[in-house]
Image (tube, rainbow, N blue to C red; front, side):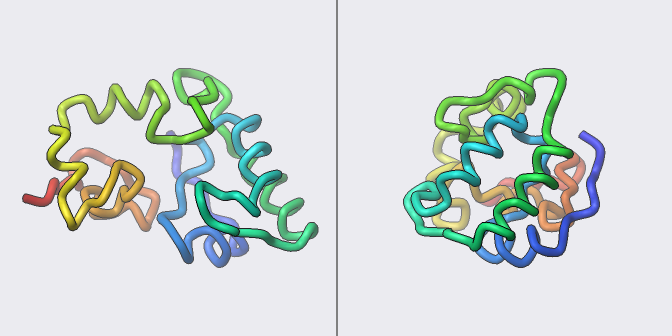
Length: 129
């Protein structure tokens, strides 16, 4: 997955609550569904004005996955339930996801030390103990 320069609005609105997931982690259809339901965004109200939603939808879908395993919409449009994510993390013991410093599979920055820069290279992975 090639790094993409993040849209400032994406960094401002989305990365203020969680890591700015690279758009190529989901297909366009998943991004559209997520952005059309921001008032129920995985248990939070992340509502935005229509112009912001349109801008984010355009950018995310333009850079979405369109080939390979990431191109298949995962259950509930959750990156952590996608086939590619599960395969990439199959060696992570279940106990690691429950560590207080990790708290779950969606907290990429807990192990991927350069996740906030969009770098998920295995060379920069440090699983907390």
